[in-house]
Image (cartoon, rainbow, N blue to C red; front, side):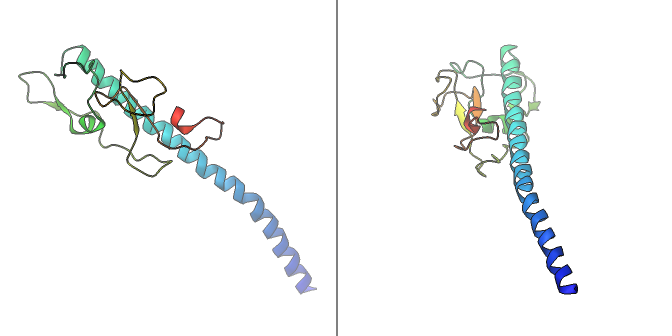
Length: 145
């Protein structure tokens, strides 16, 4: 009788475990997608704050950059605030890691680039996107976020 009970208990545990694995996988993917949304929002907000200060002539910008940062590293290093001021303003603490690719590399777009371009013109950073070719749980591509 005890061997039968043991086999029955193990089979019940096996069924429950096999039902829980897809839920655990979905939870991990969902967490990585939420992290990607957060990272993109942080970088885009930093680009917008840089552009706002440039439009108000509070920071010096390069001619032809349209007031956007030249690269993501500029947002981390910071820029001088005003001409005679020693104050430096930073927009990001660090460039986040892309949770989908695991790399510190992001796809960039300049103002001059096409809206769906996958190559960067190199003049300024207007937008940032993931280089992942994967598909999200809602059916869209991560690179389109």
